[in-house]
Length: 244
Image (cartoon, rainbow, N blue to C red):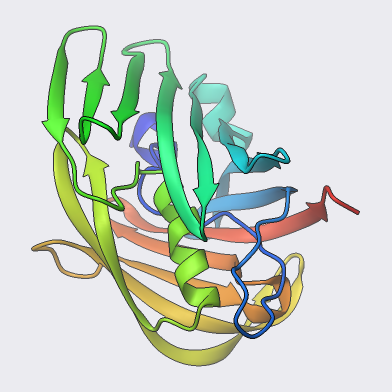
């Protein structure tokens, strides 16, 4: 099994890495800048570290970045590194993405994707080294990284069945999240009472589960995804609020 399959696209597949302040009755959810680190495992084997940061300015603009790097034997065998960055604005409690960038640096087949959102024309331009095309979008459309922020905003508003369109692979897809039950989850960062969610894309069976901790403002403390290679698990290692 190649390292490429082991660490690919964890944030592109819906890993939910964001954190928010509490919400008073009748007010809008408010993002907080943060830095977090997660351990990525295949079964019991640690294969990567994921570092996520969220930066905000006073005008409501955000920069959301994730870096995934291999560790252990995976790092010895391959030099894969994945970076995702979403830029946009928070308007009236809604995430409005403006651009998205994906870079997968690997020795055999590096990959690059860039998206630019034009909300006046209601379209997104998708660019790769080989092609460029334009796709129509709907109000509320997210990129594959900003959709994580949109999900947690919905949870903080009290929604329990959540779906929205996502520009994914050159097509507009609907992501559906269903709240299951409350459970306690043990992670390297501690023990947390969590809300369990299942995720599926339009026309597909659920292949991912998320455990979100209300005491951490719905930060995900554990994510599990089922693949042909096995079960991939991501667990919280550390969290720092950057506005304190």
